[in-house]
Length: 116
Image 1: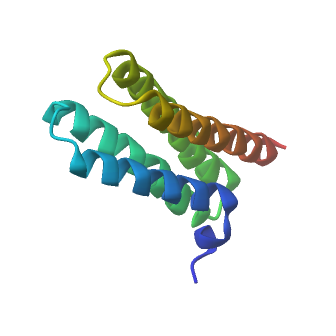
Image 2: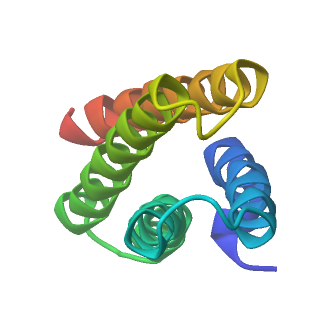
């Protein structure tokens, strides 16, 4: 087992990424460039948490967690935009936004702990 697999923030990012992946796969109405951006940003959260957990130095680990947190903001922004454009239901959007906020908060705490 890899160390990132034990991190709650990784588990949440993984689950959220699965939801986004399935939604995008089944939705033909959203333009390809938007689907591509959202998919890449969603993967970025999960992959940067995984990669950061493998770094030895706190500075390197912190940089990956900061990038993951930025990607969660990007995903939240896209989700809000798609909800306002009625490309995604309010229920799905609210669930995803809640997940992005939770991941962001967890990463914030991890980043702050690495600064001490």
